[in-house]
Amino acid sequence: MQIKVLAFVLAGGKGTRLMPLTAERAKPAVPFGGKYRIVDFVLSNLINSGIYSIYVLIQFRSQSLLQHLAEGWEFTGPIGHQFIVPVPAQMRLAGETWYRGTADAVTQNLNLVEHSAPDVVLVFGADHIYRMNVREMIDYHVAKGADATVAALRVDKGLASEFGVVETDEDGRIVGFHEKRPDAPTIPSRPEEIYASMGNYAFSGKALVDAIHADADNPVSTHDFAADILPRMLRDGRVFAYDFATNRIPGEPPEKPNYWRDVGTLDAYYDANMDLRAIDPELNLYNRLWPVRTATYPDPPAKLAFNDEGRRGQAIDSSLSGGCIISGATVQDSVLGRHIFVHSYAHIDSCVIHDNCEIGRHARIRRAILMKNVTIPPDTVIGYDHEEDAKRYHVTESGIVVVAGGRSPIRIGEVTVLGPPESAARA
Image (cartoon, rainbow, N blue to C red; front, side):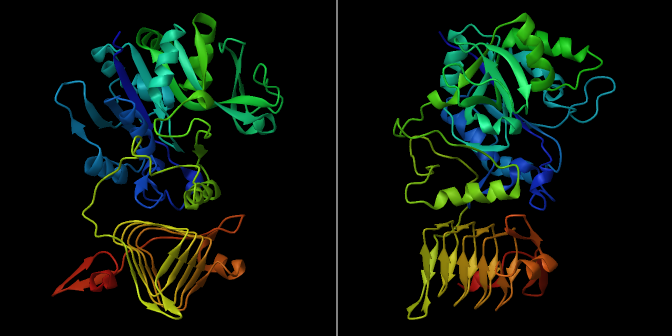
């Protein structure tokens, strides 16, 4: 039996805890892993799962996200139900403004659901780094005859106060929700673990429409799926938890744990990028059966130049994106975005560097995040003295230094423009 599926991706989060990375962009548009954006992971999961009808609901600081979607994701397929379309707040109803919550985001676009009349509606967040075969969740949802299904992550019970916890019976049916309660109920037959909600939901089409209408008429609702819609559906319908640990990705060893990371803070974001450096990384970006898709650019290959003693271009346990030039410098345990130029004798250690950055000669940078278009002058030292760093940059509690971006004017003939590092053109 064919199942008609419509997906909503909630990509409107401000990401205030990721400041300054989100000063000029929504959290889903924040770069990750060198060449990607955070939103690429949920979209790749959907496309790889054969789901091609996707609305991306956008809101705050959306220009960067819109540009990324236009460059890499917007398409209209050969038949009408294949599309990825960004949708801002429509304000179709009296008194509506910006999206007021996750459920309100769908409420303002309920006409899209009613027009499509899907069997299953997916409501997924765009704030996490993970891989998921969504078809397996849909199959589970249909097999259970569920009105709603919540993707659930197994987490040690000691972390219950950090998550929205899903309480289930032996059959996986949800019997309660507990928001950040230290004593939240554990998983049946797994007394040391809890089910944490991943913020990804599957709904039966009619059940969702009915629930949204009821929520819209509730004057005290916060218009949130976790706080309002799902608890109400517990009373009137069949709501189940889908165990993310059972999900299988084609091309991955069955014994390999599934990867999911909340990158809501600078430290978590940094750690997730560092996960990519390992010889056998927890998040495998090289699985051709489950690619992470993104915008495609006409970048030249990365280049490592010079092999002199003391001036050797080398990258050790690191990830380099297109257009990078390591010119007689050392890059170690780092993740570099597109068009990074590292000059001779510089040393980069355990850093995340976004696109179009230039690092001058003899610079030493350790445990830092460099935002897009940063130019580091020669002999600069970052990450070795946190008191000095804090005078010029943002430093997290764990000591990660965040260097804000900028763009210096460069000369092209008689015209001054804003562009990538000037020396990148000389390479």
